Image (cartoon, rainbow, N blue to C red):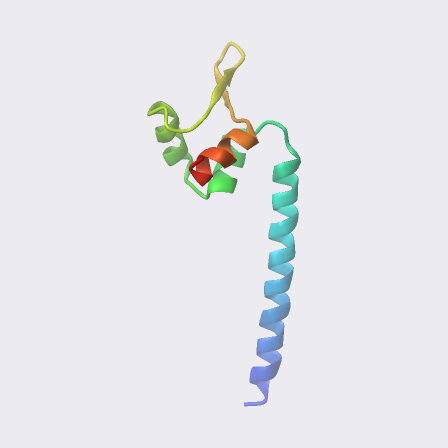
Length: 85
C-alpha cells in the first residue's frame, strides 16, 4: 500500500500540469480580439455543429467577414451571451 502515496503524488503533479496548460490556453484565447468558430467552441465547450446551429437560429452573436461570409465572433459579445446578459 506504500505505492498509493507515490501514485497519488504523480496524479496530483499531472493534474497541476494539466491545470497550468488549461490556464495558458485560456490566456491565449482571451488575448485575441476576434474569435473564429474554434475559439468559440473552446470557450463554450460546444461542438462545432452546435455552434453552427446557434448561428443559424440567430441565438449567438456573430458577424460575417469577407466575400465568403466567414463567421467571426467578438469575445466580449460571446461572453455576455454565454452569461445570459
